[in-house]
Amino acid sequence: MGKAVEIWNANEVAEGAPDDRTSGIPSSRLTVDHTLSIPEMKPHVVELCKDLFKKWSELDDSHFSVETLSGGITNLLLKVSVSEENGETVNLTVRLFGPNTDYVIDRERELQAIQYLSAAGFGAKLFGVFKNGMVQSFIHARTLTPSDMRKPKLAAEIAKTLHEFHQVEIPGPMEPQLWNDIFKFFRKASTLQFDDSESQSKYVTISFEEIHNEITDLKELTGHLNAPVVFAHNDLLCGNLMLNEDEGKLYFIDFEYGSYNYRGFDIGNHFNEYAGYECDYTLYPTKDAQYHFFRHYLKPHQPNEVSEEDLEALYVETNTYMLASHLCWGLWGLIQAKISPIDFDYLRYFFHRYDQYKKEKENCFTTAKAYLAKSKVVFH
Image 1 (cartoon, rainbow, N blue to C red):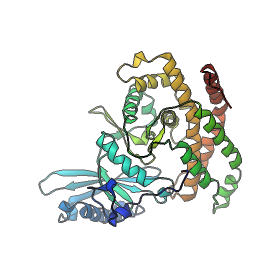
Image 2: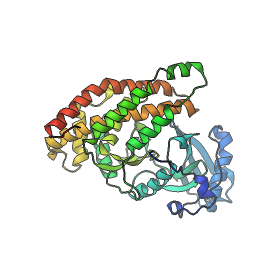
Image 3: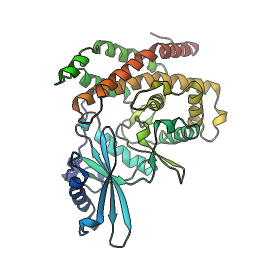
Image 4: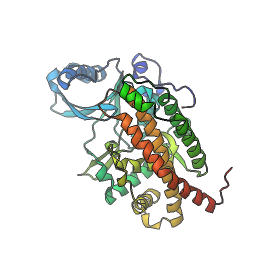
């Protein structure tokens, strides 16, 4: 961000630092090593649960079971099942933060947001924090796939839920964070040095002067769009969407990149995620598919009453900010290529995102400028 960011560390809470953001939430000084196998990790997870939740402190370890839910490309999710003395079984989710993720994630911002979003009915409830993660309620639902997001019925449901999400107010500064975050990622991504020669030889082909110019041009163009500022999820990929098919309930999860931001960025970023980790941008939604989404986003209860004018405005806003999504996550990928131990080709991911930005730029800029000219916006 523009100024030095205070990174929240659960350890500060665990050490007893006064913090009204975590009042009433159990905290522990313990750490769980994410590199251990599940059998090796289990005793540490059990110790953590007993430390956080005193009612279980006398339970025998055999009452606890631990299994992997998923390993995202930044976190490890565990399901912990506890058989209580009364015969009831309690399920929890333990989220272990990936190593070095505090380098790109503002944990303080995330922790504050979780509590307000949870109170508004979004995501899992926060039950406890520890040095390198948090314990949350278990959601009985399946994670979506990129192909799920393209289904008209689910797309409409995502749009309606996003409309509701964007109504939540989180206390604190309400300035949009997009450009602060992009410039923060730019500064970190442009000063890397890779240990292996193959990665370094690819890295030195990147023109950061060119990227800086692209960021500056796009920031100026989007500034003319007057996009509404909302509390945005900023990372609505399929892995952060869950569906309970029996109840027909959709969940947004994982708010670690959440911040106040431009509405069009949250939607455009979501549309980019139709491509999946393979970055198959032929799957980006058509104009008709986008309009279907916009109708349910703008008027969830009367989707067919959205005006053509409002659809066009949101189309231009979304597809201009979509470009910012490529720059943001491309630069993020470069940082991950350096710091993440996860087996994923982040360097290749950067080139996928930046190449797609360059491919889409001319058309999106032309469309936006034509729309703004029609709206009588004067460029300097």
